[in-house]
Image (cartoon, rainbow, N blue to C red; front, side, top):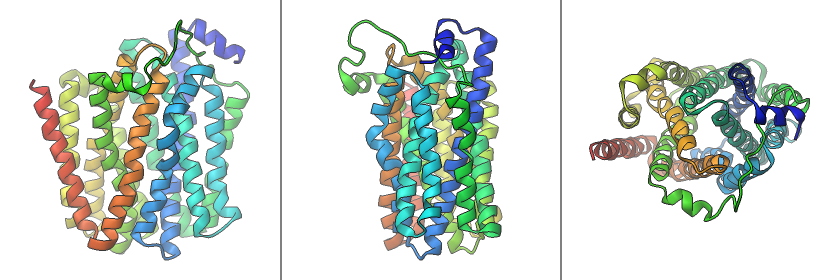
Length: 396
């Protein structure tokens, strides 16, 4: 553990916490831009090589396969040793994953690239979420997680847009090279101790007594995990199938990237307004409305046959899905047992990645056999049903 890590664990003035959070967000923006840009690049590169929707779905599922298996272990690791080492490892893996298709062109290496990129960002993100909850008291957590989410919305806008433009003007190899270069800056900052990070908590007794079952028996945590899983279905389906759907209706790579970036821009807008929204509506009301909005958008997707229509729907979907995560993360940190926030974040991420793994495979197979419209309709129905159940729970 570095001296900066230990010092900030003992004293964390308000201003120091703000500066650390700002720098942390910048590192997150860099790494997440690579992840979001790589999703567009990998999927379009696969389609360029003649891949079917099922193959593309399998590729996108690999972003979540290893995170699904190891997110809880990654969370426990960050609880035990601190967050710097996991963040360094995750950043390095992101760079390696983006560079692989350059060294070994071809469809098989795209599968390896997707798996490594997804795993690297998972390790980095679990540690980052652990840090964010520590940079301030309970009254500041919602703001801190909203700021972190704003950063990811920014990178979610930049990554697909830049990747789409680069593919059209430079080609796939140059785009992968550009993505692989970005994590170098976060790695250097972390390796040189340029970011003051909190030390791991020390608690008497077994830190993880009862394992994951204790967390899942917690009623509030269980409800938060379930809501996040629904949001993950809506989010991942959009990321996977918009490139496929856009290509089918004749959109260019730049137009597809712009549609994905519009979604990210909407998440930025709603997260920027989240403090005001939270003052007027309860947590349950916000989550209920978000599920209804997302469900309605998916029911309308098969009616969109042009870039402007997809842009409008992508913006509305971003408003819906983007409003839930910061509030859920703040509540998760509040209700997680002491010393187990990393593990709780890992459980949440494991469940989310289970959805991210299953959704592309299941709906990729459906999209190949019966078309994309039934896929959109079925997800719209699931999200709408979730909204109705959430509304019923809020009335109890």
